[in-house]
Amino acid sequence: MGLGAAAAIAGPVAAKDSLGVYSNWAAFRDAETPRCYAIAKPRGTAKNGSFASIGTWPDQNIRNQVYFRLSRAAQANASLRVRIGTTNFELVAQGRNAWAADRQTDAAIVAALRSASAMRVSGGGISDRYDLSGVATAMDAAIVGCAEL
Image (cartoon, rainbow, N blue to C red; front, side):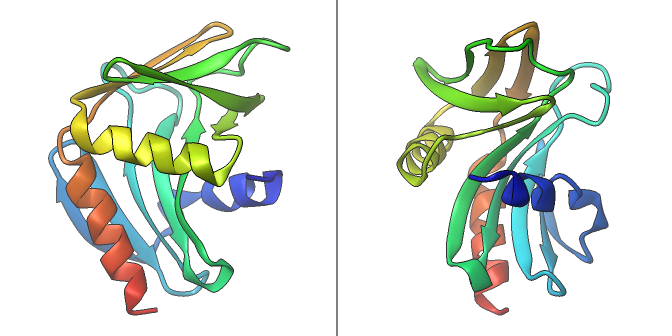
C-alpha cells in the first residue's frame, strides 16, 4: 500500500453512510470516493484518534486492505507487527501510519481477523489493542456495501 492509499483512508470520519455497528466494529460507505470500510478504535482510553480499518475501493480494484492509524508515531527503523490470535504479521510503518506490505499479507491478516478475539499492534513504542468482536460482520458489510457502488 502506498502513502496515497494510506492518506485516502486516514480520514474515514468523513464517510457519508453508516452500514451498521457490530459490537466493537462499524462499517461505512462513502459513495463519493467510492470506498467502504470496517473500522474500530483500540481498547481502553481514547488513543489520540487511532484506529484500525479494513478498506475496499471498488474503482481501484482494492479489497480488504488493512490500515492502522497508530496511537503515536513509531520509532524510526522500529519493527512493527500486528498479533492476531497467535499469529504475528510484520507491518510497514511511517509516522503514525502502518499497513501490510502487500496484498498477500492483507489477505492473511483479514483471514486471521475472522477467527481471533483480539489483536495487538506493537513495536517501536506502540501497543494498541483491539477487541475483534464484530469485525467479521463489519468487514462483510463493507464488502456488500461497496458491491452497490
